[in-house]
Length: 160
Image (cartoon, rainbow, N blue to C red; front, side, top):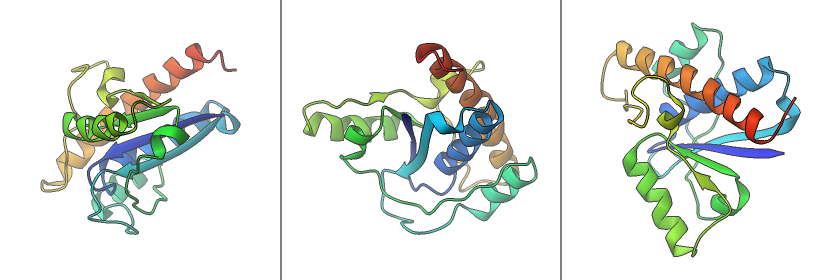
């Protein structure tokens, strides 16, 4: 089983959307039994809370349900997951600091937009303080990026 965790700051906007989108693509491809998928935040601001209502509405309007309770990313996640996918540079650095404190990990840490076809390698912007258009933009970025991540993992792990 391939274990993937998506990481943002508070785990109520970007990372639960990435988790939901990746699950959507995985299920659509018939590979649900091949993956364990989760999300977490590097900060402890929203532990136990549901995803942001605006993110849930954006996802639901496009046929994706977000079912998640926010949790904080912990150092043991680096041992439990094969792939840690941060949404931006700051969260990438936060995860790398935990990895350094552990003297390494089994997890591959890869920025989400390394799998995007548009602005590859840039960040997934945080829509929290903006309007609805920011949530739609994040949905579009994550729709592309999670599909490409799945394609990468199918090829790398010779799935199907």
